[in-house]
Image (cartoon, rainbow, N blue to C red; front, side):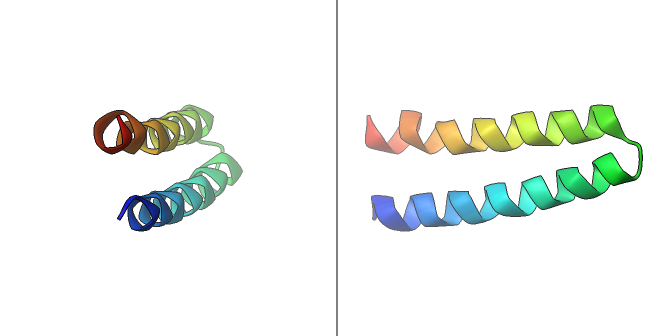
Length: 52
């Protein structure tokens, strides 16, 4: 079950980083930084809730 959760989270992080890259290319640097920070938070949140 944990493997499926992390697989889904990694998919969301990859999609979010792609979106952040497109924001960066559109000269929206603050928005890109916030999206990357939120995706890193989404990567850490399942560990804090399901694994522990």
